[in-house]
Image 1 (cartoon, rainbow over the protein chains, first blue to last red):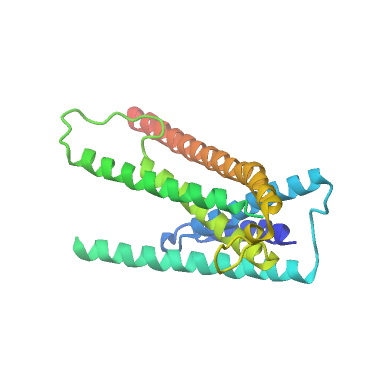
Image 2 (cartoon, rainbow over the protein chains, first blue to last red):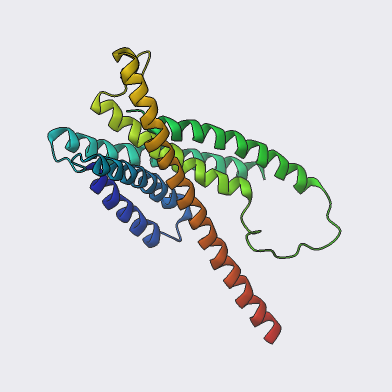
Length: 96
Length: 139
């Protein structure tokens, strides 16, 4: 379930990146990279699980919690990155 | 079991490489160039910036997968962090096998995706440069 969530979030992030492509301060490209990389890594996990004969997609309560973690952690990480980059860019402008 | 560790270690390596490359780029930028720079395919984006994107992908993916492993109980917040270590040599062997197969495949997939994305970006910029050159020649 969290793999599907990550793929959906990658699509949403890509859409946001496209919509706000002129507002470079938001750095939605990093959000796309975070969710995209996680999707890719879970895709590999799904392939290996399927090859072993295990059930690749779980829809249990724990999977829902992991999906929530994916959503919150991805946005939190992106928020921290945006804040750091904003401060760095502000510092650079002030020094110039 | 600990497949994300491979990408985390790789992210540390990429971060170190990025700082070395950036240092060299700054050194190079200080040198005075007599001849004007010629446009080359892929010369618009600095290598340190490219490595920064790869680093971001590796850190981002590893961070989300670390949370998943924590919720699955495969990783703990206390020493020795990987729960397989406390379960005996068989579990450790299984964990190392998973790192060598799934972990390396994950890292490989990220690198391939990054390389493809960089090539596409370079190609778009190259085409734009070519179009601009034709327009300026016509004028």
